[in-house]
Length: 236
Ligand SMILES: Cc1cc2nc3c(=O)[nH]c(=O)nc-3n(C[C@H](O)[C@H](O)[C@H](O)COP(=O)(O)OP(=O)(O)OC[C@H]3O[C@@H](n4cnc5c(N)ncnc54)[C@H](O)[C@@H]3O)c2cc1C
Image (cartoon, rainbow, N blue to C red; front, side, top):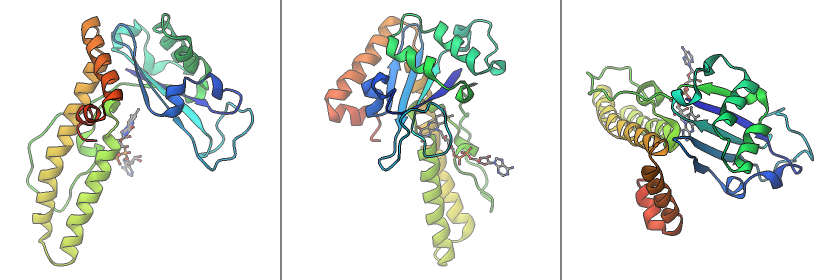
């Protein structure tokens, strides 16, 4: 299960946000199989309000966080039915021995932005008989969000499908043949992305201290050694 929330970013609270989160997307491997991800959305040209924790329009700056753990960790709480404040309390209940600055992100979240969802992953399917209707993005290869590549993969599909359709429009390819080639490639890299996203989910929520220590060590090393980072991110 994942619980997400947003904290409005302004001059008054900027200093209380952990520095790595202000710098970019930050994964936090917590104890006992709990994981948190936080990132800021900031605009270079925005006019920031001096103090305002709410969201009025799409240009408001904010920190988004996502906390995730196996459903059983949340006990008997039915997260799908809880409101924002109750969800924050459920998350904070699992963060008792976390860094205060990470807990503050949850405490400060605007309750109206907090929601929970069950993390899902699609199951690879073999190629099908191509017709003049095709698929792209989450409609086929929905994946866990732990590698952050679902939308990127959907955009890759869109670019590949566009190239195929341009060739058809120029009379260089037959429609069904062009779509068949698009689908063959897309199924291959799309479900590759599903598999790596699932593996990341398992790695980030490993309960055993040794697995967790190894993952932490790999991420720390990747921060220092750029080629290792490239390898860890699969060339991304
Ligand atoms: C918490 C979270 C974090 C994520 N983080 C990242 C990230 O950092 N990087 C990344 O690359 N990806 C990320 N993703 C994944 C990304 O959001 C999805 O992979 C992406 O949105 C898929 O795009 P899509 O166009 O295929 O589908 P969608 O974004 O789901 O778009 C489908 C659209 O179709 C509409 N629709 C549905 N049915 C109908 C209908 N019958 N008629 C008309 N319209 C309809 C829907 O309302 C929706 O707007 C994240 C996902 C989650 C849940």
